[in-house]
Length: 147
Image (spheres, rainbow, N blue to C red):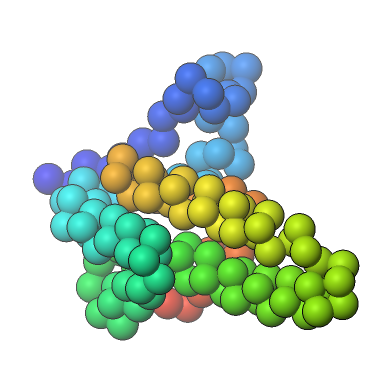
């Protein structure tokens, strides 16, 4: 069964005049076979869920590269970790200079929200980029493909 998942707008997504997703929205959702999604869903979910306890589980699908869905979410999660590391270093330096005291809590909230969004996307079986930073995952790691 080679059915592809079509991007369907939800009630909270803006749509074009025809009621269909805009070109940008359609490009943002990666069509994949249902079998590929179902097989990769546990790894995709675990990669976000284990972030809550500080485990970089996303490395497993990145190394294995045997499922397109879990690899997609692993790349999104890798960007999430990189933004967290770089943001943490920057806010740490700014805290030392007494000007970044609010930056670290805001960064933490931002990363938690994005992690929850990614987790929800993985649970729903959607390959949608994370808000704000998700496009970076697609651009920076486009060379990482399913083996």
